[in-house]
Length: 311
Image (cartoon, rainbow, N blue to C red):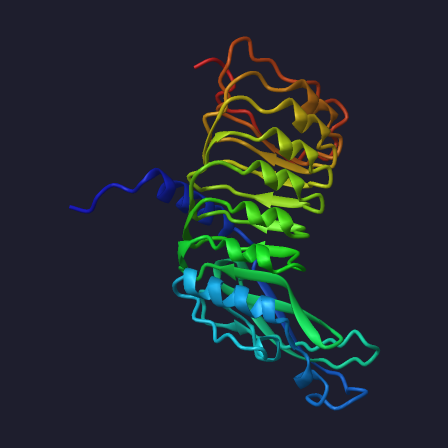
């Protein structure tokens, strides 16, 4: 007999079911721009910084199924593909030289619900002699292994998206060294608590950690992320109350904390999140639960207030 699904697997299934509602997108385009200099001569001399090569080697070793070929020319090779559920694909190769010369060649064809497909994309910024990695997106690749702390050794990394894999371990404190704008780790098997150090990433605009096995109290330091627009924490095992420091997150457009073990009352400061568009805060437990004044929230599009009463 097949064993019943775990809580994490149920949360993951629900999350993927929601994504399947994405509208089909059809994109077809072929664009070729002539270069001021021939493609190859200068680009070949721009190699990935040696420290970043070492970091990628460690990441490749930790995440099973990644199978990168790591060398100094990593940024010169094709690093992106998207394969959808209908076997159509997207390919994109771009070379951008910041020293005044511009060279790019783009060929793309898309016919899919992109979020239902496999996405593997690494973006490099080449300036001068060395290239540096700025974006890593590895979605639905069935990656396993422990979340590598060596991501923190990519000094210009602005986006890290590992959505829908089977990555375990805790969130490394080394991530606090990065200029991240997007950190998305949803739909994995991460455990432990959210490190206080995550609250030091002042550039962060999107923090998406839903559908993992994270627990413990929410760190008050997250209230320092005043540029944050999306804070998605649902379907985890968080305990305690929503920190009062979250009242400083006045740029939030989306906040989700449903499906956790958070207790206490619904904070009044939510009424000061004037830019809020999506709010999911159901299953909150406590005595004499009221709800903050949301008058003037004209943009509030999604609101889930199920089970707000005492349980």
